[in-house]
Amino acid sequence: MNRTRLLSAALVVLVVVWTAGSASELFLTTLSVGPDVAPAAVTLLALVALVLAAIALGARGRRWLDNPETYW
Image (cartoon, rainbow, N blue to C red; front, top):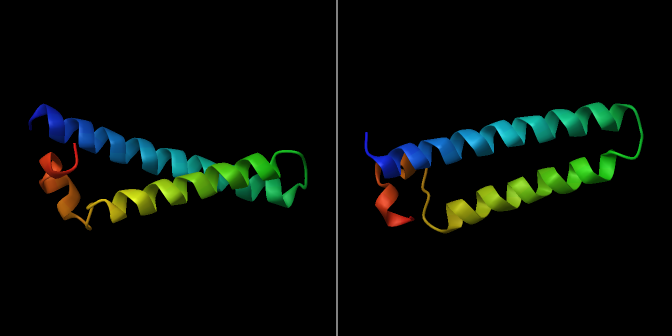
């Protein structure tokens, strides 16, 4: 595995973990109405926008990790 592919895989893992954490934080804080609801919602929306932007820039399905040279 070359360095670019490792960087791509690390980026995907980071986004997935961050999204899961944001979604769980949003769920937990929504159930207990408090001051953290808005920041969690903003974070989750930012991640959704980031993922959609990555898809729009050429990350098409599972082929994204197969050809990382096209977007780095």
